[in-house]
Amino acid sequence: MQPAVGPAKHMTGILICAETQDSHRKPFVLVVPDVSVYDPAMSDSLIPVGCLIEASFSVNHRILSQANEDGFSLKAVPLYSGTITTPDGKTIIVMEYAQHTWRLPLPSNKRF
Image (cartoon, rainbow, N blue to C red; front, side, top):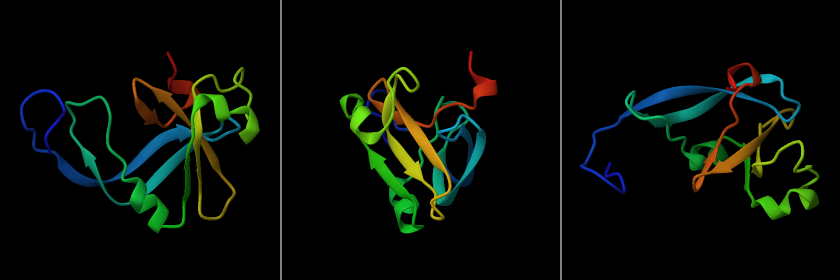
């Protein structure tokens, strides 16, 4: 893998679980199907959206101005950028958008 800035870096493919929270701010562990990209020296791991979709997750990338039409208040989710819904439809994760990247929200007990 070649980062946009800096030297080429070897990254390992692993199975990953990501601690996050659902749309009700309850802790949730997203088990990512197939292989993700991980490097312990980097701040983020890469989750392959295609693998989520192939496993029947619904991934809906949106922009901040679409929060209200999607039924989310910007007061509640100021970094709104879409949702990930589990295959059973029971859990919705509201993604955050910051620094040109979609991210899973940190669990509420991990916020700074």
